Amino acid sequence: MVNLKPVNSVAKEEETRKHLVVVKPFSLEDEKDSEHTAFNVIRRLFSLLKDVRPGTDLTDFTLLPPQLNQPRSQLQIYGEMIYSFGGQDLLGECSRRNSPIERLKSVVTWNISKLRPVVFGMSPYNPVLGETHHVSNGHINVLCEQVSHHPPVSALHATHEKENIDFTWVQYFTPKFRGSYVEIEAKGKRVLKLLNRKETYEMDQPKLIMRFLPTAGAHWGGKIKIKCLETDLEAELNMNSGSFIERLRGNNRSIKGKISESSSGNKLYDIFGRWDRTIMAKNMKTDAVEVIYNAKENISGLKPPIVKNQQEVMENESIMVWNELSEKILKNDWERAREAKKAVEEKQRESLKQREASGESWVSKHFLVVKDGKDWDCSPLQSMVPQAPLVITELH
Figure (cartoon, rainbow, N blue to C red):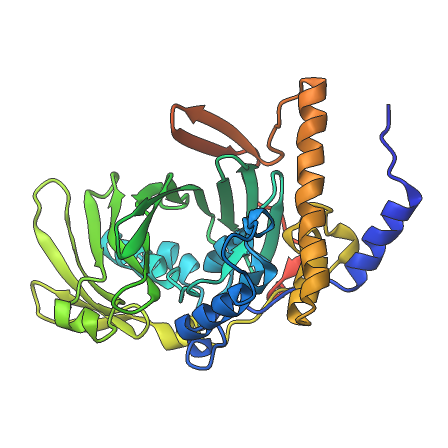
């Protein structure tokens, strides 16, 4: 039996497609004058609570109000790490290098390029089950899908058509309260395959630290390990590794690390610098130092995708799901924004009720999802991500 949508629902979808809101990625230069600085976010939060009296029923305030939402889905933020860049194609460079050590250095550089400024206190939308985000930038095609809602689990698949590169990750979080800060540990596999080189790189994910004292802010922390079994090479990057005095001065973006041989432990390169400025690599044999990453060139002036083909934008695409809410947030129309957010949430609850009533289980459209205890694994159902209806730059 064909499940036809009501005519008014189809008309509303078409009208939404004509006015799709796609916001610009948060770039390096946006931080200085951002309205979302820690001070402004805290001030906004207090303004929301100023009329709340002691003893007031806060049940309607349990969900994050639109005033504290970024006008983008978490899936968009994941995708931007891969498809949004202002400089050269660092992903493709991973395969173009001729020697194994140069390829690992390029993988390190590309990993660092995925680190972006974090907007403290402003939360993206929690993706709904089945929501997707599909964007292309030249030869790079990226597809994200929310494969679980409780707990929230996101899967990403990216491919590079020209260089025959495949990247997958599955991501889910474990937040831990540490007193003066919250440590958010990102779990799940990240695997990069350089298919032309027959090399596979496995890598960890950094932690996100949301600090309240002595000053409010957010930064990346922890350790990232990158390992290639085929070449016997590995890298280790320690995030936020500056001295205590440096951290008090606000330097939460330093990186110190190394590249070494896995079997012998022989160190080949020292890695050091700041991911929001430059990262250097020092050759341990020659003492030569080179700049391997320049943040200003790669995460400045970032552009949003444009809608290349409106008819191919699916109903569950992030910008379709959240379009009305994003539009109202950008207009500071908070009453209608709350209504729009409530409508998305009610639609998700209704879908869950229907599945429970019919005894159906949710099946991911783009990934084979396997849960083993608390661990999740997601394998793409397609070997290559197709070109998307949302593009940064088109192929020529």
